[in-house]
Image (cartoon, rainbow, N blue to C red):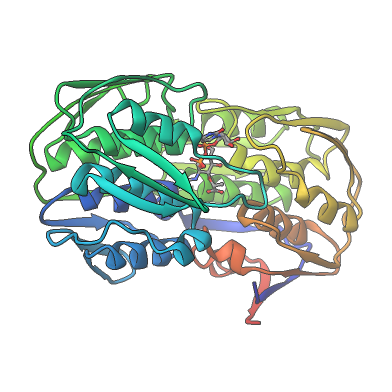
Length: 419
Ligand code: EPZ
């Protein structure tokens, strides 16, 4: 996955930067736009590889999509294909989020199994169980899933064994036209779920309870066109704050919703970072050694797994030993090996990583194995002595828009070399 970043570490980052719209809000809302026989206008859609793949998926299904890098128009009036292109599913797991929308709108969907990825097996059993409880017949054959509603969908009580973000979103979409009431219990509470609920209700759906753990959907006949602004990306924002902390600098991130970042704010403060929170911005100042803190990733509002690699990079330079427990994904420590190659002292045992802080990291060649691991390696490179080369940065471009330009605006010495 070509391309690399060359980073000269050591410069404390100083200045202000703005967060983009959230990737993990844009993707489910793009899928939800398929539900409406009309045009949805979405503002704040970030320019990401994952967004471009999802755009292609929507177009293959019959939607017309115009995108100018910020505003996206999706006209799903003529949705005429229920088969999700398998090559795109392989490129973007989150393309499985169109399944619920196709089931609701066309009453059938065929999709390839979205295989595992670098952080875990990532099954979709909870998504499929939800579809079945809504009345769909689900058949899995030869690596493909076919789900079909032979009769109009009926509302149902659905309990999620695990508060899966994707399963919650897919079932919300599948249920919007179901007769009667659908209740999703033990639903994920992420801010992106609330953003999806707000978008669905603007389309004319009747959804309530997002963010509270139990979501109730009253079926409606049809949805109409609308417009919506995507919430800011809390993970991109937190990554930029850690960039300020790990370089001993002073960084302010604007255009954010601080309430979405409580767990990260608490942990940065515990580590001794000064964190000033304003209405829609956060500023970190770090002019002394970071102290070791323990991290345990949990479903929202717990500490986000998507910030675990970045915090591991920070903790690798902390005073003391940190215990990092990854409870969400079974294989999300690959960045530890790369950090150790930079001189970190991290021992991984299953879902636990023991991070003994070291006084410095040294630049070398490292490889991004997934989106957030890649971000962690950039952060380590910013703090390391000498030059760090992060390879396979197309992983990073999946979820960060021009992260090199944003960091350069803060004084980082980072250049992109396309591979
Ligand atoms: C979403 O993935 C995010 N992706 C991930 O962000 C994020 O890490 C994850 O939620 C957790 O917060 C998008 O929103 C596009 P899950 P998702 O279903 O929906 C298990 C990033 O870097 N599970 O909550 O796939 C699963 O194996 C990405 O931006 C089942 O067992 O996450 C995992 O262990 C990475 N059965 C756990 O739940 C299912 O049917 C969490 O998965 C579904 C999930």
